[in-house]
Amino acid sequence: MIKPRSFTVLTGFALLLGTCLCAQDKAGSKDHPLFTRMSGFYIANYQQSDFDSAEFENQEPGKYLERVVVEGKKTVILYMLTQGARVPTTIEVVRNHTNAAERVGGKMTYQNQDPGYRIASMKFSKGGQETWAQILAQEGRYTLTIVEKAAIEQQVTAEFLAKDLTDTGHTAVYGILFDTGKADIKPGSEGVLAEIAGLLKSKPALKLYVVGHTDNAGALEMNMRLSQARAEAVVNVLTTKHGISAPRLKPLGDGPTAPVASNSTEEGRAKNRRVELVEQ
Image 1: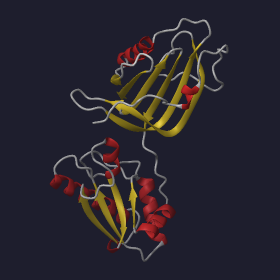
Image 2 (image 1 turned 90 degrees about the vertical axis):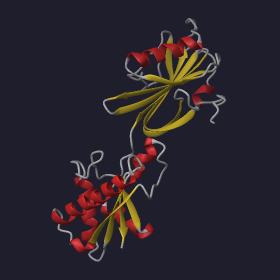
Image 3 (image 1 turned 180 degrees about the horizontal axis):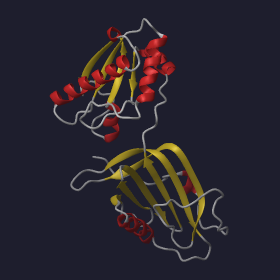
Image 4 (image 1 turned 180 degrees about the vertical axis):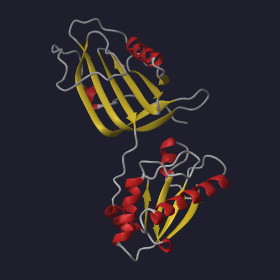
């Protein structure tokens, strides 16, 4: 069982105490499109990164509290109350944001009941995009942490693949795309396949096992067949479109039998769905 955190410090922003006579937003800062700021507050601090992570509380009905690590574009905004403005209660601040989330299809995944340090987590899913948000409200200030979920883009080059093979004898490739349950290679995979072909052309003696991997969703037999079919599809493209000699490549399907992460989370399952190149 995971117990709720003792919220002593969520972020360095919380070290700023009290209201401030200055009421000007920090240079370069802005509100996040998901939320309208509450009256009387200004942006005292602002951080945004293209790829980072944050932890969010999630508690499904009848289940224990869990903490979900979400990676992607991260925005953290600290709002402070302007001197002389009305001080809202922490539950008022939190409810304002959770209600706003519900109006656009979001749902609250967790909230605590500490009036002095009130926190709520929210999840948004729209058009295939998943976004998580968390609000931490204290008297006179609140912090929003928002992560727009995304996987880091793997920079696949022939040189990168060659180094991985030299160092470990195998390399995982995530840029070859398939529809769920299918073995047809989707558009957008051409660049990665061209780099694999470039690797093979730069090393004429290199022979590879092309190994398909899946997550554990579905029956084992189905996943074994699917991973084999996907490996064969990759070999087919390399031989027919890139002129690689067929005897240099052997397709194999390992299905879900060699995971590199836990299948209990979507992040782990995404890492397990891959093609690996293994030196023969």
